[in-house]
Image 1 (cartoon, rainbow over the protein chains, first blue to last red):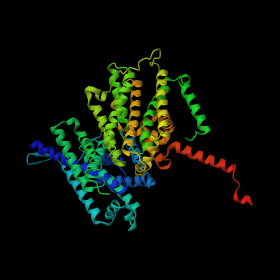
Image 2 (image 1 turned 180 degrees about the horizontal axis):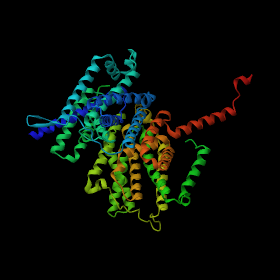
Image 3 (image 1 turned 135 degrees about the vertical axis):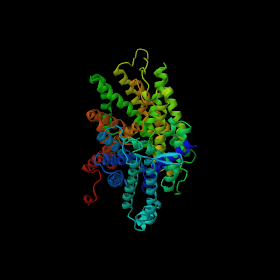
Image 4 (image 1 turned 30 degrees about the horizontal axis):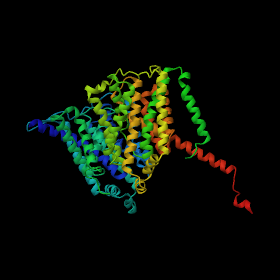
Length: 286
Length: 331
């Protein structure tokens, strides 16, 4: 029983990271209809930014995380302006291929600049918390709390502020949003900034638990795609719920069924769901 | 059918002659090896062209089928089956898997199709990596023999391997051209332009797309078989999504939907990558932005640039010799 509870806590920590990554991906898809294959690379760059701020410049982990998120958000804006905006009105295949090119560039740059070796990010939260027979590392507690706080902040932003509502409106109906005077180009930039920032937060949170490397975003990004297809591409609650569900399935499947194939569970679910319902489980009506 | 312009005919003849005499002229075995690899990749890229260029769906599982073809042939050949039996067996298996996968995958479109095939590609690679008892896992398969001799013709020398691969490349191009000019090929393009319109004029969209998916995957399988028998060893990396990205880059540089594009793009970038081998670690740093720039400024690749140059030249010819008197000269 205690093994089970221990694994559930681990799954919630992992699910928090998945949800943050999936949220960014689903936001960009909802507003721009681009499946951003480079999203995992932003997650990776966010982790590296925090890593270097902490290890090379001696910044404390918490402000380092915030600086990394801001820097990667700026990178997201640049990406929208330079790579995706010129493709407005073109075949969606073009945007997908550009996203692949960006992914190659970021991964290749990280490998060329910092080498392929795995690095360990030290965290000030390296103790453990004991809770009714369970031992949880402090970093996992931080991951869960920070992720939930970020999600609440995102929710408040999207529903209570004018800029957030503009994003919602554009996701619902681009033409309609333009008619009522929303600058959809600025919305696109803002969406990319938020999406990239979320990826950087997720990457920085997870960095002390896993290892930082140029390919750390690859599998996570695929899983995030699985999550948003299950939860409905463009759906925010779908991304959050899907993230936790996938993490639970993986951790429990890995513990009780077969560890070697726990990474494949997400893709297996994805293939099954699309085989039964090609538009995903909770697709938004068009 | 539009007759190819004179320039294209000359280019075709010159290319054929160069391709045929290349092993006699090129004494450097290493360089010839690079050309052979490029030809093999080009066969897979022609396959990708059928789906991406003609039918307009982005499949990211292409290298997965390359791997399935390669591993099927490799496993058979390691166990003593002749290349000439392993080849059709591998093609049949790749095509069959593609048929069943296509039944599911092609219920989705656009972004969903891309993500679905991406997941599929990853599943194929992970399966090859972890099914160690059969595939050898991350160590791969080694000791795959070259194709067995047919009568007096042996395939052990590099030049013989070259001509074997060249023959299959020529076959691939011939099939591609035939498809493009056939009703089936035009149905593919009709679907790319508008699925609803294609359905309205009586095209069975589902069946046609499955056909295009199977053809595309079978080309990838063929390339995989040749890759395996040429190299003599394979690893799970051949099926990776990174390999698909590379093929996509070749296709996009050459020009998706064109018939010369896959070959031109693959040869150019393969050669460039050899020249830049000293900077191997920077390859992706250069190729990534190259892909972005191509998509933004030249979405039809080199074939598109060539086409617009040709149009401009024809226009100038027409302007230079007006065949119809202009209105202002008439009175």
